[in-house]
Image (cartoon, rainbow over all chains, first blue to last red; front, side, top):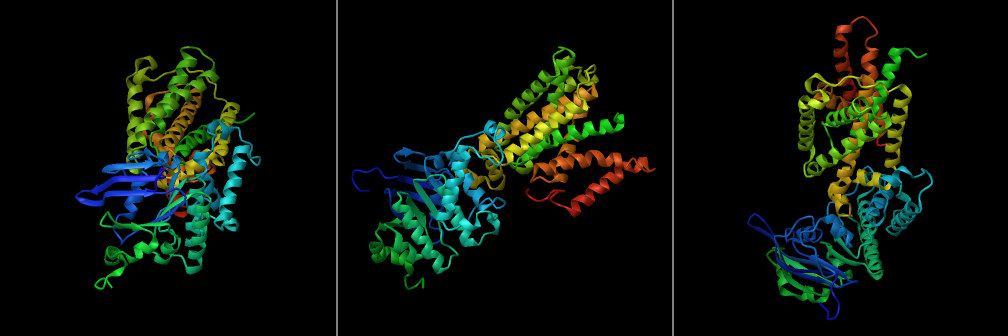
Length: 261
Length: 271
């Protein structure tokens, strides 16, 4: 951690066991504000479990998860989301029978107000100021991820790359400070990967911190300010792309030693 | 003037639409209940007691019936939200039975011998007005911020939760609202029947309400309403023709055919 600034996310001695299996063990991590931080590692290294712990989907067995200095270990996912930590899923989890626009609008839920009374008194066709603002913002976000033309399509009808984009737009609708992307370019073609890289950089430039896991190494090396390497639930290395590329432990564990190839 | 037989069918169409929508509301967030008969009983007994014994005005009783049933719904809803799918259905069934047995033993409302002397207030205009209000409620919720959250919870709870939707809050509220609407339906029923007993609100009733929603289509409040209309009118239509004793058999066969032809309900599409 650089001196003087509180990391947006800090994880201390974080562990999660499933029976006798240590999916994440004594993990430590500090994510600087306005950075792109990648967590890489072989399949089963504990990356997704780490994401599940940080976003409250799973409670940790032990350890601390500090969001802007506040310990949120064991908190419910919706509370963590409202603190500005929002994720996407490796398998893409959209609301399939809702349109793209509605998916993003749901993301505005926790940043807007209006309960049953507001619902009863609304005038169809004449959205309230709150509703109109939410729609405007959602349309902007769809445009930003390149889905403006598909906004009235059902989420289930979108191509995989577009579904991933939509999931990111929905997460952005929550006004995240920290965006966790779990293999965001899996299944994308090279052009789509390039577009995703540009999007991630522009989000960082807007002040959003990004924590991602990815197997697409050239993307990770190109966009990451910092990389953490996990294996068997533990951190085995951390540094810049250049440092990681040269780290002998990483080479053995992950990037392919002689016997693995 | 309207034929009294036709009028009674229309009144039941309205009551059943209200009951069907009382289940549609929690279903819109993925919560299935086989205990709506229990909430209906609470609304019927509370309002019936108020108008007959306490001689209070009908509209006040209607409101109170809905509010009390809704509050009980909130209480039942809190544990219901940790339970999912089939287990929730069984829990709500258990709740419905508890309410029935409660009124079976509750002396102030006549226990097993039932409660009579409830004044008639459920006329066709009253039913039409209340039904219209409940339909309006469903329509307004559907396109609102709350409606979107309900749909999101139904589609994928985890995805809804990680974008900041408090599942407990959303589910408890809609379960309570559905219970309140069922209570209002019970009040309408009580003030038409004038005599109520616990047997009228048992499992059979809950199952009927369940079938209306499934038959009409769970994805859409219009479907639930149409399910209620079909399920009320169809058995009456089957009276035409000579085979009275086979009427309910034909009815059952028709239900099976409808579900085979339209497995998602009569109004299967989302909107």
